[in-house]
Image (cartoon, rainbow, N blue to C red; front, side):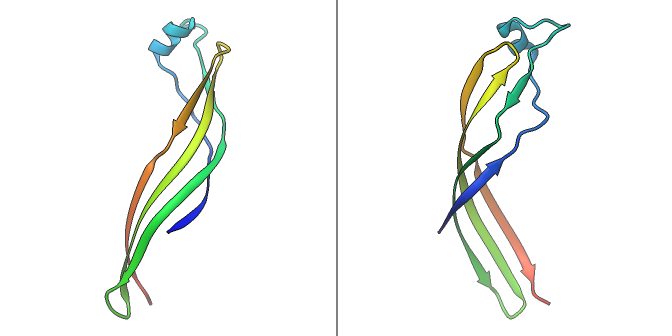
Amino acid sequence: MAAGVTYAHFFGEKTTATLNGLTGGTQANPTTAKVDDKFGALAQLGFVYQFNERWFVDAAYSKSFLKTKIHLSSGQSISVKLNPNVFSLGVGYRF
């Protein structure tokens, strides 16, 4: 088990016509969004199993705990929690 920090940087945010309609945007002046970059906590659990001198498998599960804000060009802000689950599996060969 390991604990750490994760950093999330957001770019290329896109909004929808539905959001545009709900927030008073127009086709000529659509509502845009900007998400704050944030640091968050990270927990990871995993193992490495060595089959022989050369081959091994590495498996891990990670969970990030991240709270951020979305700022709309209409002046509104939305608080969101982004807590992704990440599963990874790797096979390796030592030279």
